[in-house]
Structure formats: structure tokens, C-alpha cells
Amino acid sequence: MDIRIVESYDEMSDLAAALVIDQVKNKPGSVLGLACGASPIGLYKRLVEAGKRGEVDFSRVKTVNADEYIGVPSESPDSYHGFMRKYLFDALGIKPENTLIPDGMAVDILSECARYSRTIKEWGGIDLMVLGIGTNAHIGFNEPGDAFVPETHVVELSEMTRNANCHFFANPKDMPHWAISMGIREIMFARGLILLASGAAKTVALGKMAGDITPQAPASILQLHRHVIIIADKAAAARLEQE
Ligand code: GLP
Image 1: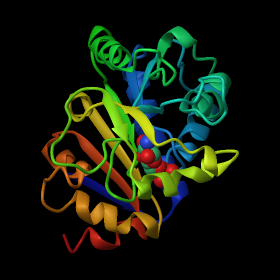
Image 2 (image 1 turned 30 degrees about the vertical axis):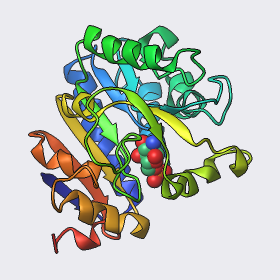
Image 3 (image 1 turned 180 degrees about the vertical axis):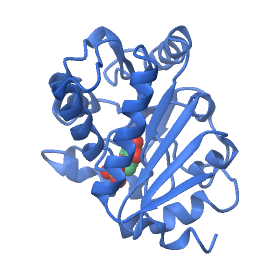
Image 4 (image 1 turned 90 degrees about the vertical axis):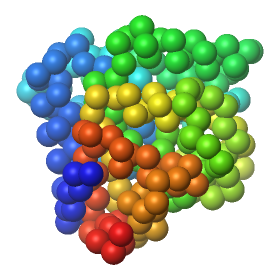
């Protein structure tokens, strides 16, 4: 694993932005895998600024998100659709047809999962995927469990994950119990991965990521990826050296 330890959230975001911008400059039609949550907001801000300055052209980029809540309409600001519009898509003018986020309101959720997996393949897979990490070492919404789930699937969210994410909701009580998540194989098939972690709340999770490879710590599978860069600030990285 290529682990880069930086001083701060801003430095983490700067480095991640430089890597994503390089990717798009080298391949303007890149398929970018994206995550929601606090970790990538600084990165998205920098991508928007670079796009507006004309430093990089995102018009041919396609995006694939890792996950979405079930039961939250895509029009809602609480949804991951809403998050992506707010922090990236609207400001960069990324066309809806070039974005892929699971439909958490689909009548047939299992067909929606299958459609999602199929579309990722039809788009030729992901060139570079940005991930955060949950406090229990989940990636996307692949929660700790008895097995790694390969394809896009339905997930029951753990209490830990619900508590960590409910503050994003206008009314935290609306935090869903269920989500759709890209599977571990789909994440591992990305040609490059960047995982962002900032703050002391991620120290244990990063320790697990670098420990035994087990579905009980889904991020640990990243140790088997040949092109993964972990960008962590000092607080988050505190246990990495021990591992
Ligand atoms: C959620 C998302 C993940 C994200 C994680 C960490 O569970 N589904 O994709 O990586 O939260 O979020 P944050 O960056 O807010 O700590």
C-alpha cells in the first residue's frame, strides 16, 4: 500500500485533487469512482475550482458513485444524488447521463443492483476511484460481515454507521437503515484507488485497514490492490505505523 501521511485535511485534499486532475488530463474520458461524506468535500471543492479556472476539462468524464440510501428520493438534499449535485456535479456542469448513482427509490431494488453492476461493466470499469472509510472500516457501504460481497447489493447499515452519518440529514432521525452499495469486487476492479482519511475518529479504522485481511474490516481488502494510495492526516494515521 502506498501510504501518504500529510499534516492536515487541506493537505490531504490538495494531494487527492492533484491525482484526480492528473488522471483526467491524461484521459479526458476517465470513469471516476466517487464517494460521499465529509472526507472528499475538500477534494471536490478543489476540482470545481480547477474546472472553473479552465485548468482541466471534466466535460467527457463519467462518474460512478459507490452507494446511495434506500428510501431517500434522488431530488432530496439528504440523498447521495443531492450531495453530489451540491458539491460537484452542478458546479462542474457534469451531465446527468454521465453520472451513475444507485436509485434508492427503485421499485425493484434487486434489479436496480443488477443494472448498476451491468452499467459499470458497460462503461468499461472505473479508472480511478475515490473512497472514504467508515469508523468500522467499511468502504462504500460494505459493512463488516462474514464475507466480502462482490457485486452491487443491499446493505443493512450498522448502528455505528448510522450514528456517524445521521448528522448529514436535515433531520437526523431520517437517517435510513438500508442502502445500496457497490460490491468489493467492483471496487477492487478500479484501475486505481485513493482512500482519504482525516481526523482521530478514523485512527482505529485505518489500523484495521492495515491489519488482517478480513470481511470484518472491509477496507483491509485494499492491501491486495496494486494501485491504491492511502492519504491520511497525522491524526488518522496514528495507528498505521504500529500495524
Ligand atoms: C459513508 C459513505 C462512505 C464514506 C463514509 C465515511 O458511510 N457511504 O462512502 O466513505 O461514510 O464518511 P466521512 O467521510 O463523512 O467520514
